[in-house]
Length: 576
Image (cartoon, rainbow, N blue to C red):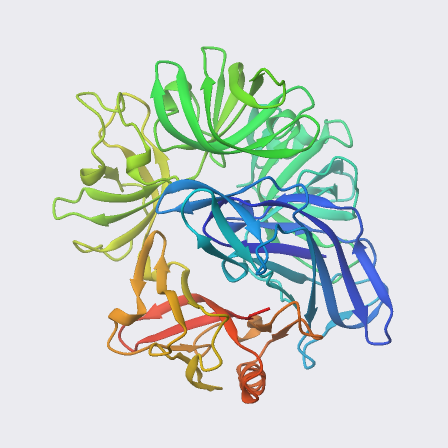
């Protein structure tokens, strides 16, 4: 089985994954994914997709290949400082992207080993940050693409995943059910069985009826087989043929998808009466295709059912849909004169799912918060009219109710914060937002990004060893990007006293993914699971001066006291 993860500053990045191929040590080629799958890679930025592959012959696999296809891609959509911007995707030669087969070589000391009658986890990451660079910012914008993909055998961990497929039966599972997987937006494939375990806290939404624990399991047992559902949770046991999955949330039937409605997922940026403006929309059609809509009006009504994802909250109405909230809404579309472009959605007899919403802010002295972004958008992209009892919400003094946040360190004035929760019902603020978690910015997953211009650099580091990498900030070929990103807040590396050490020391050593390469190398992109092997590869690649680095991306946390960036994932993209 495999799970797909991704990162990047994109609102939407829809392409096809045409195939995934594995090469065994004896040269045998196995293709666990042969049916092209349409996927929005930007949506994988916040959740990992679990894709179960059909049975793969046992053996030791030394490399793999992922074929990415931009042929049907119209535009990709960027998130530029909390605003949307469309762009075309081009290769380094300046022509439009078509297809690219990316070879990935596993660490020789950690190949993919498939054992008979046992599942194994293969983690595949399409790294949008390492793959794309905005080379033409002004409209018509262009991103230059040098695809960067990693694969590695990964241990079972606490990664939250989305598992989509078809319900089978509760028979044979003490507290749970069997399902067959069908990833992304696929309406045809059936890629294998998974045992889904539930517990007393598992949330169920079954065709619009909400349950918790055993009541939900009893209700799902009466449902028809082969109906669609989506489960959120974590991997369980991989020791058998059918892996297990520990569910925290289950969405069954028409609450998730239907052949009778369109499903739009996005952020509410304005509301006037019963009409909301939905932005950065992922649109799912009854035919199982997806499209991006930058902005669309949605009409709600007294017949619109409202639910809160993961929480059995009673008495919700359309008043709970307010500015800044991320939602999924189902209804009937209206089209433009061509009959192909959605220009509105009537949800008066449909439903809304309130999704967990993230805001980034800095804390003011009076305990209000100065918004940097809300639901992925900058405050300037939103109209807060009507949100409050005596006036609109004030982005520079946003009132956040933190009474439901578990006890923890008290944030300090000026501190960067990531807050997750939901927006207060329309017309009732303050408070403007109810928090369920609050995390200091430096404790979140941060991204260190550096790019090099003029075809890349042959001297990108002042040092590269087992201890880590230090970027040469005085390099003449250093590009415009050299920063640590914490949500929407960047920190310029040149503003620091010295270039930080990018190190794996202190990171989870059981799940290191350290990669270097490009599609033009015979070995493609080589992935290493130890710092020493990675450092050796970096030094050998630059020893002769024939390869140049175009981009460096590391994921982890910046330690300002020691001026180190501790990362479990590092991508070094060579110029093609």
